[in-house]
Image (cartoon, rainbow, N blue to C red; front, side):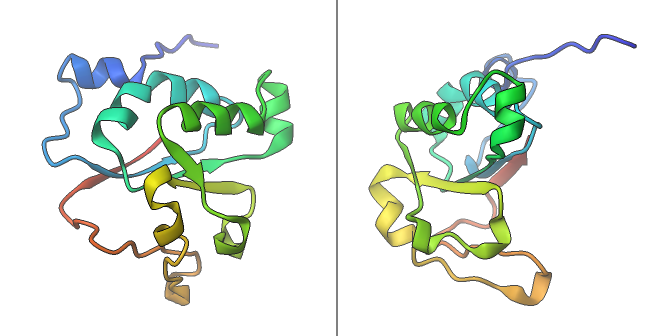
Amino acid sequence: MEEVAVRAFDDLVRTGEITLPKGLEAVKIDVEGAEAEVIRGMSNTLRELRPRIIVVETIPDHQDRAGSSVDEIGTLLAEVGYSPLPSGAQTPYFVYNTIYVPAEQSEVAGRGLRDRRYGSAMLRLEGAEPERVGVYV
């Protein structure tokens, strides 16, 4: 087994190894239970760039194995100003994933549109800038 270096996203942005000159539109975090660690490692980026949507895999068994919890994920994201979409606004295609948006936009974002042509859900957020980048972790 080989060891792999792990770096915080905030450090990569701070050192210029990752540049985001046009901002950050969306984040998807799916790391088999280490979601809380990823959020901790990118909290400054989330605060400063305010992505319009963050989708986090929230499978309780994965979180338990990693010594974390779905509640911890929610708390960490609340600390940087994000709220989960109301449960009625969650799309059924995001089973075991929770959609978070900036707290000040949670009501508006809950009205996102589903597009079934792709076999999974796409949320269309009003005013989204197509040239901004998304990151999948």
